[in-house]
Image (cartoon, rainbow, N blue to C red; front, side, top):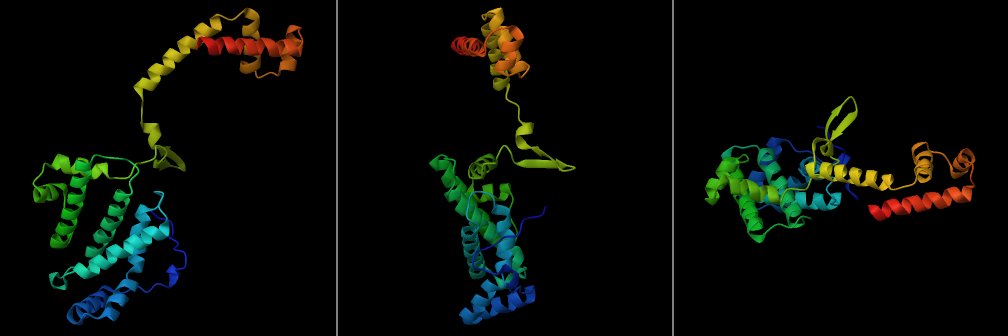
Length: 258
């Protein structure tokens, strides 16, 4: 999947330095051995492009892009502070889940949908366990591993994590064939809605049946045939004012019965 270019106000992303994995490891060793702030700053600046690549997954959710960027940088800084060079794992492999986790936590805490306190607490614990396991395993854990760490059923972990996931728009494109997108709403049926539509159609038929033949004739010509009041008046031999009066009266009768 392709992502749109992320633009951060006041930051020329095209000039950001990109470090090799070897350079990152050298700087990490230097920072951990000597506490060098210069090495830490180089690590941060040399991984900002990585932050940009991660936040592209979280755009389009009502958050300002520069806010997401700042949150992503916090995740990067946590990854730099917690990374263990002795494990022999690529820094980027460890860093990406940390950045994504920080972004998910931010979006969870500012979520538009209210969920129960107990579910939110479990989701928070699950996110913490996920970060701990990611650091220990050097990869993202599965739901079973998170559930075992928390000593709770897998289903509870899934429900908790889903409760803090972002709502999806009904008009979110889920498939595209030859440029013709298929939206989520196209895949959802509503039996209650169909029943209501059927009942409404019956009520409308009853309301129309109560009208006089002249009123039916005017409504048919006006709204089925799309003719103007002047055209209808000429066709049935009455004035435009009479057509207007009869039309309004017929519509009022229908509204009253519906």
